Image 1 (cartoon, rainbow, N blue to C red):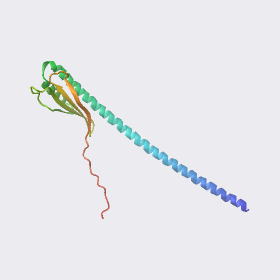
Image 2: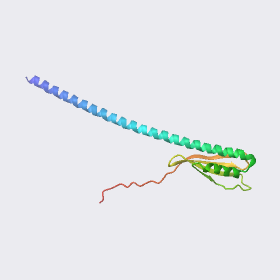
Image 3: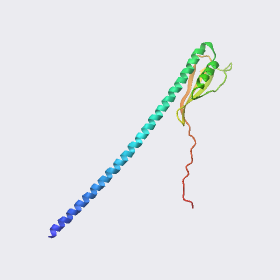
Image 4: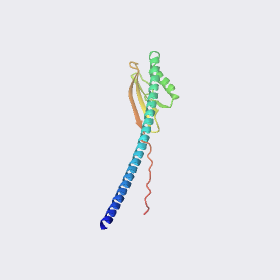
Length: 168
């Protein structure tokens, strides 16, 4: 009789131990599944933001190229008939209806000057813009040279997020 009662007791420990292992495995698999889901959602969100940022950049780049093409067309038309000042003024009028910042760095070309620098900026998003700087030639030898074509990120104003601590 003693041997049969030992067998039953040993059997119960074995069944209880395997139940605990099964519960542990289920909890572990559930935890890993949750972590995988959270990671996949974060990757999807990051991918979506990356696509939006890339589309915004290339839209701004295309707009900057369009403005450059318009300036080049004006310079080509007026290289025979006019002066660079006229071409720049026409480009400023052309760009005045567009959502870009357009400025002439050297307003007039003097007798000894051989170039004129203009800069325009195309907004990409709230904190980024594309800056383009051109140097126009007075002698129209090469019409213009692109001095700068770069992405600028404004740091913006950082808001202080005060941490609420326990008053002592």
